[in-house]
Image (cartoon, rainbow, N blue to C red; front, top):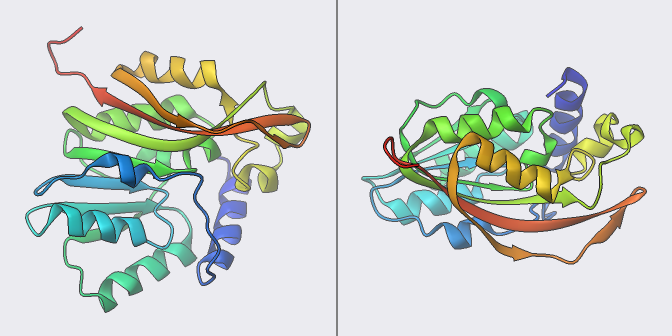
Length: 216
């Protein structure tokens, strides 16, 4: 992400950290089916509520990481986990293009309406692929555009921070997943298009699996 976009996201979501506003474009955790003992990551973890849910689902032998770049959201998430005495969680400030988590260490990655913010989405998905174990899986809810986002919006930090102007088309999105190496790519649900700026966008929830070292 560019510095201006990071600053805009940090400001927007830090301001929203203490509100009851719904920030998500989907329910990836519902389809993640986290199991006992698994290691899970929520990218764009916000207030941390879904990270805490993951921690409860995987139990004390499992672990849940929340990754975000908003100082306000991270502070809120850490305070909530501390108040609830949730021990098997950690919240990390990190850009998605360089996730500060060990390679081949994660069973499940979820994310809700976050990856569209990233300028280099191939780098983000490469990082997701890197941190997942072989046969690890992702379930991501995100936004795609009906056509290429006009540059007047795509270069506007505020429009990108609003979760739509950084989107790419569905074909570009799916081709990126295949290019990185994911298999068994499945669109779980998809919304009807709705207007944003001069284009229309849709939200969808998509899943996939990291191949084993010997699979083709």
